[in-house]
Length: 307
Length: 311
Image (cartoon, rainbow over all chains, first blue to last red):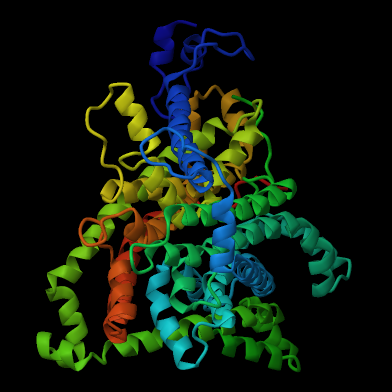
């Protein structure tokens, strides 16, 4: 095995085994202790990100608990008073109720409408399929403000402005396509032979759905629902355009408090509302993560065996 | 077009041959499953959108007087009024770098975190966490944390790294930071899920054939991942392009970060000029679709099909 022979090999797809083997001077299965530059880059990036993230979360948390806090590392005294004050002042019970009502209505409706549609798009070819795909892609691709402003105008024309119904309808517009788009690749990855086998054995379309597809799709539906939930609770633009004082979701209420005339409310009141918002989202996420893996959006995770 | 095809499909039940011929082209009763979604999209998306486009051709008398152009006065104003048109560049200057950064940084991180190690799930959960913050809270946190008297500046000042507090909020940088904090986890989540959809045995096979990691990445993983990357870029770009609350809260709303969404909202709720608001909103969509069209054009050349992630 001389090297000259290898270099004379055709320069196409030939993999230089000898060279590759000598590069890592480790026995198979052994790992180097010194991290590669790539690893350093990744960990540095993650560290920088987390410094900002925790800085943001902690400073809001401390702010919401502190009495006067100006030019020091920490406030002088700690108190829970801001929470009581903001809860009473902004009627947070009502606001959180509206937020949850909107979010769960949106999830249920968008899954019911979206999943069957994504099944058809994943499995069959028909004339006009491209057009239909475009119709479902557009609401995700177009910025919310672009269709939000005409949509809000229509809502006000129909007398729906500032109602909870309007908020739900407006939030459905990006959510249904979102479910369709995320579920389609998920369904594509399920082997059609399984369905065909069931159909050969005489199962009807309905039975194929309930007995074969539904169990396989549950992780995908859960993942899509959670993303819709997070998007709806966090959706600012669309909700803001149609909601009023009695139909504000929590984000919109916080924004209004931050920008209200006269320089906005006291910073600590807003911080305490922000902490409540984050706590709510965190609770949703923790419950969600008990059921799904964060990466389980497109496929069942196969743990990679190497590297 | 679609719904009429569905109708023929169900009416053809009597004549088997017609039904058969239609089914061969993919038109069968299965398509009925699509109907709710299409009706929904027509009612809540297509109709308001068409209405909005109609509205743009009914400019206010004041706009017509100032800019001329009759029915097209709103469009004339959009292109000729530097105050409005500049915000196109302002928006793109924010959204494109933010989306690119989020996607490019997510790739190596998703790769590294693909393997098994202690605390992996914990780390992934933490990376997903910023989704819970939302733009408004991120803005509030940035104002406090990275403001002139915030912890970040205080730490850098007391350690003698800088003499003057860094101006990180109420400008371009503040909005960029908020876009990265809210967009990166999203990009990471999507990319790592696409990555987990790729069967690791494909890479393992390449490895047994002696390919090193560069070759494996370039020949196996990247082509399979590329469509997912394109989708992720588009979705993060859309998020960044329609930035609105953070442009107002941590940005410089009358200067550096006077984005299109802000202009449209001002016309809608402050000037009550619905036709101008619709014009800005629709032109915003047009600008965005142009960018997306380029990405899709590239994507159409890429591999499509099973990535073998699931049996």
